[in-house]
Image (cartoon, rainbow, N blue to C red):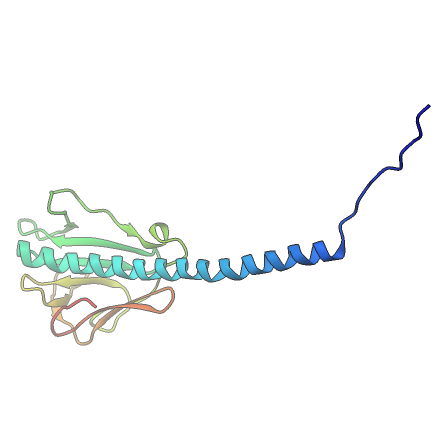
Length: 175
């Protein structure tokens, strides 16, 4: 006959729980700033992309001689490149240098957590398209592309995180 052994169930001590809590707190303290850096990088990249698209519209206008613009839609969080066709006078989709139509760039989809908060065009109105003439100067136009007018102020696109893309009134420089 064998003697029965007492079962050896061991619980978790308060010291072990405290050590685990401290390690988790240290890990959380290092992860939160890293996540904020990712968000900041995303906001910066979105502003750079909007500036690149508006600058591309300016470059297309000077290269093609056709008025070209960037339509900014704050409600849809989108930027769409447009041009005025010489032959028809219609506003049509802008094409890249390979001849492909460029669709809308959906900022919130491409850069999650970032959107276009506001857009003020060069005439002080909200919404519309920043147009560029053949020489790269910024203009406003009506919805069908007619009635070009010089900017009376800088145009601004404000993105999440207070990032602002500016089209300078006198030169058309995109900042």
